[in-house]
Image 1 (cartoon, rainbow, N blue to C red):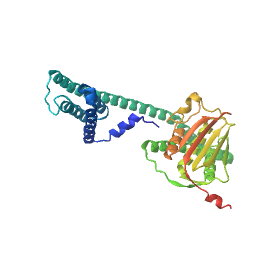
Image 2: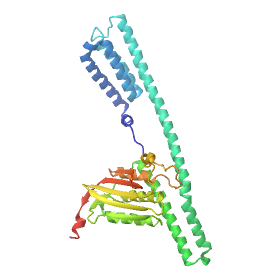
Image 3: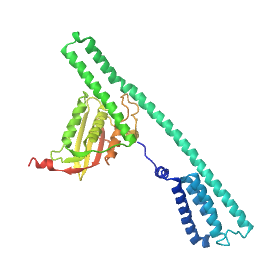
Length: 368
């Protein structure tokens, strides 16, 4: 998911302001700057005040539309003439030098305002073009990934179904059971791809409604591991939950998806003989979930990029749409939490998810 800079956030806010409000803010800004200049003009002179007002016009031009910018340029020229050029509080200019300077100020202010606004428009068009190119590139990446990732389980389902339909009389019960098992595994993989696409769509649209409820972490972890093992994974998966682990108030469905994607990622990028462990702990109303393995780990230069949308590790033959870890981060942040990745000293990778969650120890009271 994209991170906005401070300037981008300011621009996003300003774009929601009506032109009438922009004009009002421009007038107030000129008034405040003029008030400041009134105090310092005896020390800096009225010619320096002109440069301060020009700087104000340029600042407004960086933020607002053309009408408020032109209004600021005109108003600053009038203010400078009326309040700062002798004789004060009149529009009379006593010297030819000041008259020329005022005329030049007005021209420079309007030109600066127009040019700055024009530069902003060119930058806006360039950004929109770049965003369109990035969007096309991302969708091409997604379609290329899906063309492979969806084709594989679909082809498996079609082939197994065809064998069941046309070779049913020659199939033994064992063969028939194997084919049904293949269909089930391929269907679950297909469902996972579709689930990831739907989840990414929810994250992109910002339409995520959290549904908090009390959750037994031991039950959640074992259920998630069982779903992963239904894919016939070859790695050994260990679950570690303390006996006194309290109930946690969280979004169970979203948290289960986070853990499923982390475990699925571990099974994709670790050898068949690897061991994967998943654990849960509660520390000061913070739920801490850890998924780690003893595989090869991640290239250090790619650790900061693995949570990006559509990103897949370089030099790996393993498939994947590159959505799983991006969804993990998106869901964790949606629950006001964080997810981090680090390579273990002894080898392998460790994902740590920390979520603020209300804890209840009622579960333990039942056993006393």
